[in-house]
Amino acid sequence: MTTHIESEEHKALRSAVAALGRRFGRDYLVQTVAAGRPPTELWSEAGKLGYLGVSLPEEYGGGGGGITELSLVLEELGAAGSPLLMLVVSPAICGTVIARFGTEDQKRQWLPGIADGTRLMAFGITEPDAGSNSHRITTTARRDGADWLLTGRKVFISGVDIADAVLIVGRTEDARTGRLKPCLFIVPTDAEGFHRRPIDMELSAAEKQFELVLDDVRLPADALVGDEDAGLLQLFAGLNPERIMTAAFAIGMGRYALARAVEYARDRNVWKTPIGAHQAIAHPLAQAHIDLELARLMTRKAAHLYDAGDDTGAGEAANMAKYAAGEACVKAVDQAVHTLGGNGLTREFGLASLITAARVARIAPVSREMILNYVSHQTLGLPKSY
Ligand SMILES: Cc1cc2nc3c(=O)[nH]c(=O)nc-3n(C[C@H](O)[C@H](O)[C@H](O)COP(=O)(O)OP(=O)(O)OC[C@H]3O[C@@H](n4cnc5c(N)ncnc54)[C@H](O)[C@@H]3O)c2cc1C
Image (cartoon, rainbow, N blue to C red; front, side, top):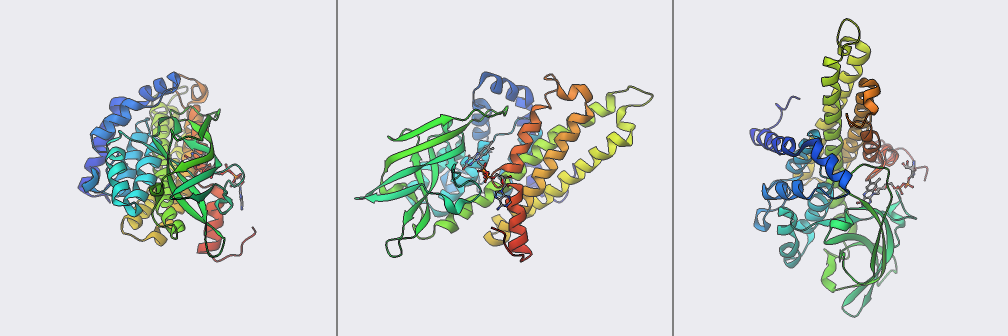
């Protein structure tokens, strides 16, 4: 793929991460999934090499870069067949929110470990009765002396089993108006009253999803991240990186699948020429490549705006990038499977499981339809149906 619009540093980062990705590769990930364990070796190696913390401030052990650099890391690992989903969550959401809004103590306590991979933080916003409508979340924190008591339920929270804490989106009651305001809390996974149950997903992924029950979990005052009155702003500071990183995840997966299909189409010969010479096979692969490149360009734009401090501009671009990348990934994977014929469905070639995996990028962290809603209302000014 062409990378000429990227700086020399970014190209160097891409090729260094790609080399790490190749060293582990698809086989490593397939083995960890089969063993039902997390990709610990790749995670720690990426941490040691500084890739997990590339976007975090240098004074807390990070690389001093931005979401631009972190998204390159995830895309290249994905293109090598071994993406690290928790990059979307631990450094990109939690690390960013703490770096931007945390107290000095919270930064010192969490950022160095998130950066080198020795500590991991999951992120919980989705609730069973709220889903895409995050205005409806009911996980509520109430004051008890200097402490907080947090109660609620969350679903589909990734990586809770390997996390030290979960950054939970809850609400507190405004003392004046009685209205509930969104707030972020760092909740240790070993806290009393914190219960988790794995959800049986039809996904071959190394990271698991959990349902959480928070039953009067007692938290110290300093579990609250940032300002109680600036909840939404802080939340969006974490959600934009999440969308940009999901786009990078999808592009990496799409590139991986496309590369396997192209290799196959070059070699497989059932008539006079390789199947890749038939335009019915070649053109959809070319289209998939174009769609991935376009999504990549939008992802770069979103990351650039975010790193430049333009949260509003980044919001629109991050949504569009996530949409484009999710769609490009789903199409690339579908076409890759088709290109391999029967082999597209064998375990040996390992592409069929990506059909389910690719759908994640269309559903999470915000679904295709919610992005179309956002663009209809925010960008085009059309009225709302809901
Ligand atoms: C693998 C995986 C990992 C995840 N990890 C995390 C995590 O770590 N932390 C976390 O908090 N969450 C996580 N999630 C949850 C994810 O963010 C949600 O699944 C997603 O936000 C959609 O919510 P929902 O599943 O409740 O779907 P719903 O909101 O019930 O939506 C169902 C369908 O209805 C459509 N729909 C809903 N409202 C509208 C509307 N107004 N207009 C048009 N269509 C609409 C949606 O587009 C969707 O197709 C994860 C999910 C998956 C699958």
